[in-house]
Image (tube, rainbow, N blue to C red; front, side):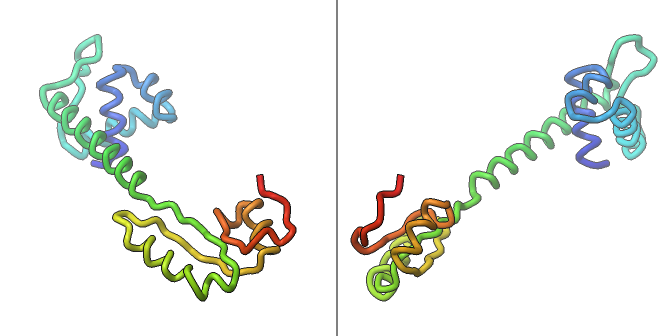
Length: 153
């Protein structure tokens, strides 16, 4: 038994058609059929009452359907939680003299936050940092004065 088989079975219990399941999860109808057959083989029991003219689950099929729904819900919950915990990485440019002064304090304050973002510091000259922010290579930069440079939009 595998997750793909349970997923196909779950959707089959909802959509009640192999072709609709295939369309929904992006497979062919024979692939869906193979997944359902594989699930039944691995469990050693029929899940669908094929003697009926309409789609009907066996008693064990109803039980497996409940577990399949639980597995899919757990998978969605896990995926959602992991995605929400992915941290954004920021790259901050600073002029060389700032790295020797308050950049260290900034780094410590960021690290002390309850859920600190990942931050990389890049040291460079005013003339280098501004174009890097504009191009997206840096998320932000601390520069000294305007140094005759135009505003970044």
